[in-house]
Amino acid sequence: RVSLPGPVQAAVWDGRLWGAPYTTDAGILYYRSDLVDKPPTTWQELIDVGRQVGERNGMAPFVAADGAQAEGLVVHYLEYFWGLGGEVFDRDGQSVLFQPDKAQQAAEFMRTAFREGVYAPGFNTMTQEDVRKTFQSGEAVFMRSWPYAYHQMNGGDPDSQIAGKVGIAPLPAFTGFGPVAALGGHNLAVSAYSRNIPAASEFVRFVSTSRDAQRALAQRHSLAPTMAALYHDTDLAKDPMMALLAKVLPTAKPRPATPEWATVSAEMQQQIFAAYTGIREPKEAVEALRKLLVATVAGQ
Image 1: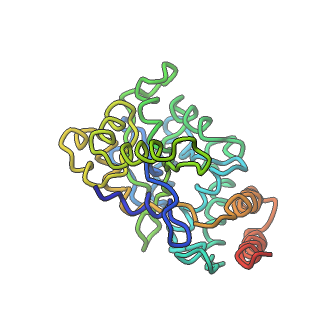
Image 2: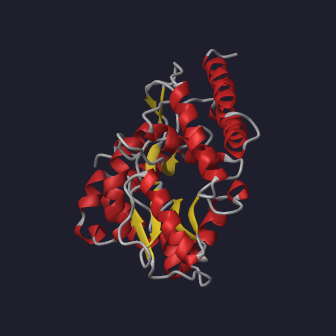
Image 3: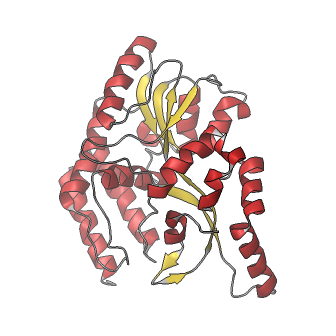
């Protein structure tokens, strides 16, 4: 009944487990399987193939969740940053790493993609659902999103124009590095003010550690289980999404652990948005962000 390491790490702070991993997911790549023979394995390949296919079919090369100044933009940026070997904090969240060279390189990658039309038009205003609707309307060759979109685009949403033409794969990597996906999902915790803490705790224990409960969440609601053993389950392994997540989740990374995440995320949203849209130079944005991170860890 061992949970995947990523979901457990996301529930730990200061050496204590504060929640029980309930469901999980990770960022993945979607592609038009009717137009692309095989998914790209590097970001440069995605750009090259996306441009070639896009020019032939009147489509943008790529659309990704999210481009708007919101939490999703932070996750999107972190996948590039992590993919270049960067880390925001050390493992215990007490020291700032946030390597300026890697942070700037990730921001410049986004800035170039935005300026040169790699991202779909309007990317800087797009949220998660805007991205899905752009891709399922046939306006982009590739999409970075979460697993939930797979069912929607393959018939769950009657407006989808690409049902049966959706391929899925791990995110591409930068040359010389491996692919890194951001971890999503949900954890469960019991409030100290609950009127029945024992019963609530038992329920959390049941849905997070019961093989039957976790399997039912996957089969009935397409919610990825946090229990590692279930990815070897014969029935679940037949599901393309579960088979993909079995490959992606073991190395997926949770957002940086800090009780000040709301402050960190808000600053990162502002600085990264300004850097990639050309409002501010990437180097200046990264320097400002690093100062905020250092001050936050120092309690200032």
